[in-house]
Amino acid sequence: MAELQLKSHRFRAEREADWRRLESLLSRVEKGGARTLNRDELVEMPVLYRQALSSLSMARAISLDQGLVGYLESLCTRAYFFVYGTRSRPLERLAGFFAYEWPAAVQALWRETLVSALLMVAGGVGAFVLVSRDPDWFYGFIPQALASGRDPTATTAFLRDTLYSKASAHEALSTLAAFLFTHNSQIAIFAFALGFALCLPTAGLMIFNGCMAGAFLALFASRGLALQATGWMMIHGVTELFAVTLAGAAGFSVGWAVAFPGERTRVDAAADAGRRGASVMAGVVVMLFVAGLLEGFARQLIQADAVRLSIAAASALAWGLYFYLPRRARPA
Amino acid sequence: MTDAAAPRRPPRPARPPRPLDEGWREFVTPEGVDLRLKIASFGERCGAFILDGLIMLGVLIAITLLLLVLQLRANFTYSSEAAQVTWLLGFFLLRNFYFIGFEMRPGAATPGKRAMGLRVVTRDGGRLTANAVFARNAMRELEVFLPASFLFATGLGVDAGLVVLGAIWSGVFVLFPLFNRDRLRLGDLAAGTMVVKAPRRVLRPDLARDGPALVGALAFTEAQLDAYGVKELHVLEEVLRKADRRTVAEVSTRIRGKIGWEAPLEVSDMAFLGAYYAGLRARLESRLLFGHRRADKFDRP
Image (cartoon, rainbow over all chains, first blue to last red; front, side, top):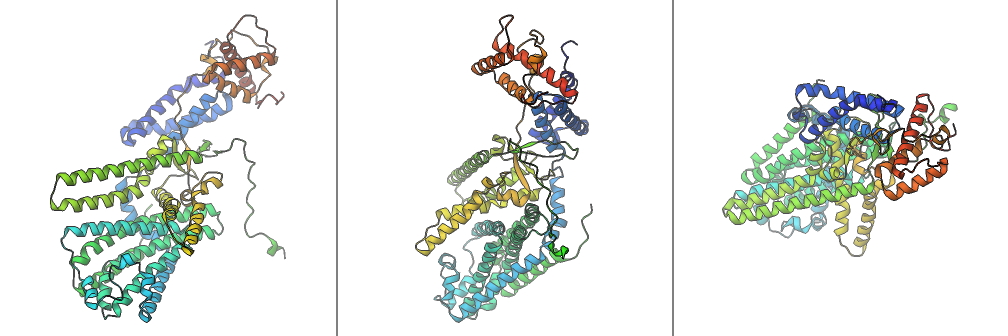
């Protein structure tokens, strides 16, 4: 073996086959996922990975061949992300998310949720009082496009009709539901993201949201339609407003962590709050999907006030119990 | 009163001085080996984002055209509603779940990122969770869509002033990655992630063995081999691997002059450099085994 005169030559010759083997397995995994490996290959993977890692340490110590060290670094990085990457099954994860993770994340944010809800209620009450005193305030809260004729100049009969309008045909409802869902989800995600800017924009969004609801209610209440309007709004509003409140709460927690990180570094605190907030937000999108269905379908198909109000009460109860009922911790 | 004067937090450990080659970051695996990852540059990430944007736009146009064609072909009552619902949901899913979906896969990269050789990793070296991916992409609302909304907003008088202020405020978020060492954008900050380069490399032949010259064809004295250190060896390796004729000639002349090489027989520049590389590496590596790592030519033995 005259040509293997360098230690680094012998080192490479002895291990190269294992590296090539790991590389070929990784190429298959990166193309087709872990399913492409059979059992023996799955067992082999971590062993090959650790061999490659020790080769890397060794190569750094004894070899001055940069091509070799660079190759091993890239190989080990690829293997690292496979060996330590996510691998739980999607269905299991989904079940775990709804059974434990989401309610736990919502419970952990109870303070922020309270603040968020209070801001919204304050906005609603404020707008209600202002519009009741002077109907002109209505135009300050509700954009012209959204009002679509439902403003203080409208007749009582017209307003009553809007509460019980039936869609012309059933197929229009699915479009409405889809539009409401996507629109509301986008706003909720926006509220969450805005929280990063030190909470204030999210707080503004929450107050404004409350103001719009308050102004509408005040308008209908001035014509003696308070109860009917409440049923019309709350059949989906319980779910929707709760979802938006939670989105605001998630935003607050991130903003608060950025502003007042406490004992940890700002970066760590932000990352923790961000991940927990994301878990809440994934659920919020689901809630808004339900709200979209209720608003798009149920509100148009159900015309009786009593049924509308009881659906609202039932959904409030259901969400409350689901989130805040004490439950056992997640099994490890 | 010494208690009151004591700092509330324990002092942070002093940071090691910045290395000269910025952009490399320590990334220690549970086995205790540092994998040394390279942070993706701002330009690369912009490139990846533009690619992804183009792909999304293409998909959106394709969906729209497909739905239009379907509507023209099948002319029954539900088709128009179905088309609208599909378009609304499709747009929503594309805007929010294009990035999330791709980054949750094992590759942890969108097509744009893959094209630029990038991937998402957690900063602490742990698993990249679905939550982290969701958080880093939800923040995009703040970084892309908020500034865009100010861009398209119009106003007069006080409103115009507000729009300008808003644009400046949201501009802070867009340019955020330029002002920190790890090129983190807000989403990375909120999710504890970073974007690194993860190119695939192939194992290239060992130049000291399968190089352009036969090892041992030229003999160098110890003094000649002691002219350079590890840093120069690595530069020489790069020159040999690129094999650009002019550079090789230049470097070869430089080295011949420096070590006082008097050609016993005529050898090509490439062969001379290959032989010198092999000799220098053998010398430096054997000294390395004895614990002497000669960093560069100024590092006198």
